[in-house]
Length: 209
Image (cartoon, rainbow, N blue to C red; front, side, top):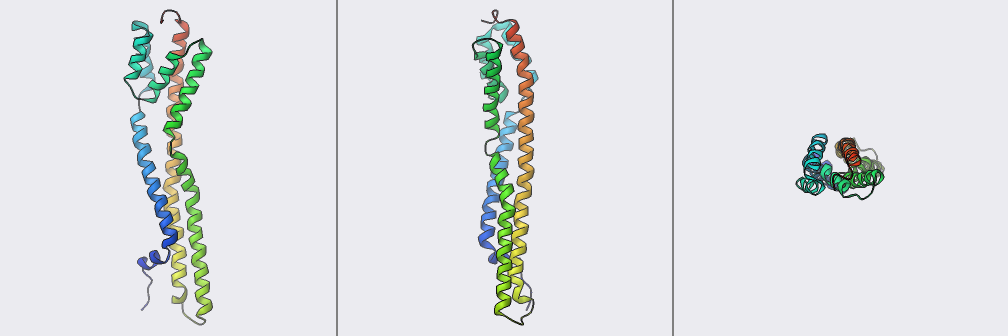
């Protein structure tokens, strides 16, 4: 009776596969969390700033801050920091950078873990491969003259751990790159839109008190 089933492969490689399974669960959890977070953070930054400037010009800084409080979005949080900044243009630009960095950190939360998993999973799979090959050579040494079935368990374990390591790593790499790019895009949009607010505040510094 030959044949080495997938079930047998999993049973033989379970120590490494269990680690990769944990990596996979963590990756999927982070991906879902960041997708929801980025979706909730989405807001047209230029349109928001245009409306905020209109409120600022017509109703003053206090009402503009209240307008920002209505939106639990990164662009609104950054705009509020700019409005609260005391001093001239330099102070507002520092407030912009400070607020933007804080929002980027929130949006990128947990994303570095994806990068770690993407870099680690293939090596964990490779570890399983090495262990499987060692087992295969051990089986050869204790079963001299045996057929291919002697080494099938070790080789199967080596193959499945390598494959599973790649299955875990590839989506993690793709998700990591996507989230980093998406956060950078959001930050750039906020940065460009916020300078319109800074310009308007600098131009009418006294009238908005």
